[in-house]
Image 1 (cartoon, rainbow, N blue to C red):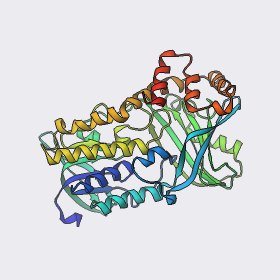
Image 2: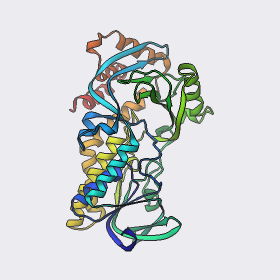
Image 3: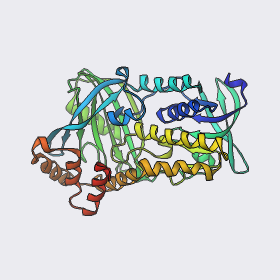
Image 4: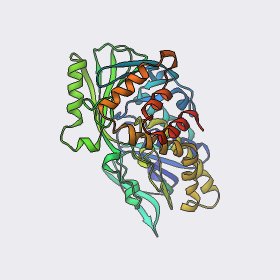
Length: 395
């Protein structure tokens, strides 16, 4: 039992997709792993649009039908002047049921040998000689301290683990979006299509989404740039006005709020005895705000590095830094390109967004694509076209 074991190879703080992926991979390689989750249930609350690509998910797992609320093969964009543009996606995506998905990921980690404890609230690190060597916290009212060769911060956008260790995890206001989402029912939606509303009216410096979860239910939410959120109108006001306009008879099942870090990855993802993964490391796609697949990828890469470090020279920053190198090799370059794209397109005026919508509307539907859309969007900034091409072609 975890409470009888004093030390582990790895302690993972946070039971989301990034933390569970790290725990599974590390445990499969023979490491002793303890995963600590502060909430009483893995996968709850769901603070996510729940969208993933089929290709991204298959990096880790064969999609399980139980995880999938809707399969998406088409996209609809609505401009400020209500110009509507639709086209098929070249690669399908899914809207997940995160409660089931996250639960299963944690179960996979447990089957691999990781120990999982919920209602475990971490309130500090054990640091000796500038090296992280464990965590301390409470579990069902009882204090505990556990030591580890590596502590993994998978504690989300609010991550305190990295901050406690002295890593700079602060996000600039312009790189933090204020997000709110409501899961609503009693509406009619196309269960195979993403809807995006791009307008300063609905989501200044961001976008509003309608992600279907069947024919009569959807995640409807928005994220607005911190640059605009500070002006006084709260994100929930924008969303309530949209729902009153578009879906006045909708019934709200759940409401979640939170910050979305559309920032560059943190400069330092590791230090002696510590690694950051997922939202805690700022791996969220800066354009879409999607964090599930990037988080899982960071968890995988971090675990692979941790296994090598512990089986060889130990968990020093010198050995763990390979994780940073692998991240930037596999996902980090595109992350930085997406960040540069975000910096441009999220500053567009409504007139510019209408121009982009008109431009893609003039393209024959069978020739429309996300690449074409972003190419039109970047046409006024030629240097950005290189980033767009590399993101979508893998150059």
